[in-house]
Image (cartoon, rainbow, N blue to C red; front, side):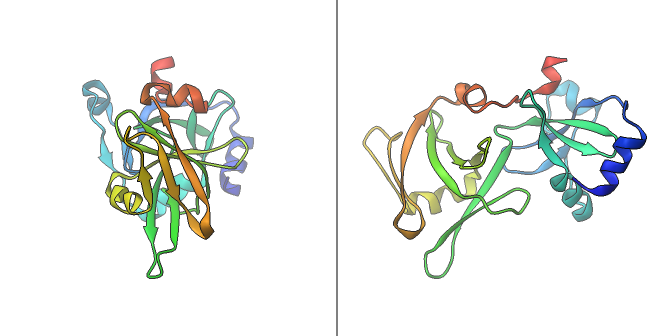
Length: 190
């Protein structure tokens, strides 16, 4: 968290939080959702300002209930999630070495891989608590180049770096939030 944010929290500790105004979409884009977007269920307008995106990413975390938020000075802006709290991009360099990067630009080191019942790929890291991230759908080709699916299409193996093989495990999309302890829509709980 930025020092300026900590200072604002100390100066104004009782600023009410807000919900519904910020969305992290399925592809890792931050979107502003005005009242019309919220009322219609639209995703909202993508945020393109580089400094604002960096500020959001530096001040993004979860509360004790698994609700993800952006600490905007003294105000918590709870985030609506398009799927998971993290979205990762998978790439292979010229030598075929794989890397995962989250929507904030940080490295993501997987310890488990899941395939949901809609064909989505989820990575879980080894942090405490573990982070769960959905793979950006543009990277499914790279993933399939390094995975071997069984006939059931929800099990198999993912061939990560340095000879590490991560088994693919099935998961129902509807069970992901509860299984990994996050809230998809803090606004619905209000």
